[in-house]
Length: 50
Image (cartoon, rainbow, N blue to C red; front, side, top):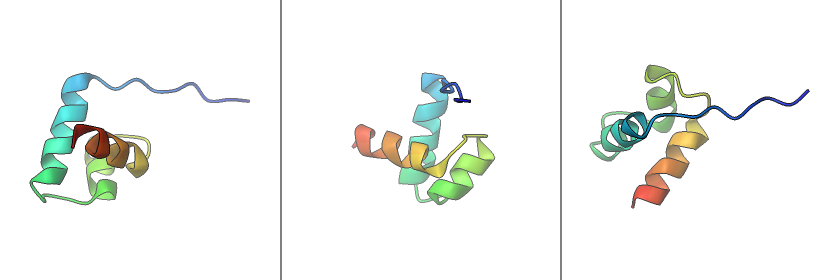
């Protein structure tokens, strides 16, 4: 059984990226804090933002 992709609001993505770039947490910590399914998702957003 496949799992549906979760959509995250743009403001949540931007906040997660800003927190990471301000060195306020690791990908994993940010994912946990903002209820993001996977830390690699945060990493992808950061790389796209740069």
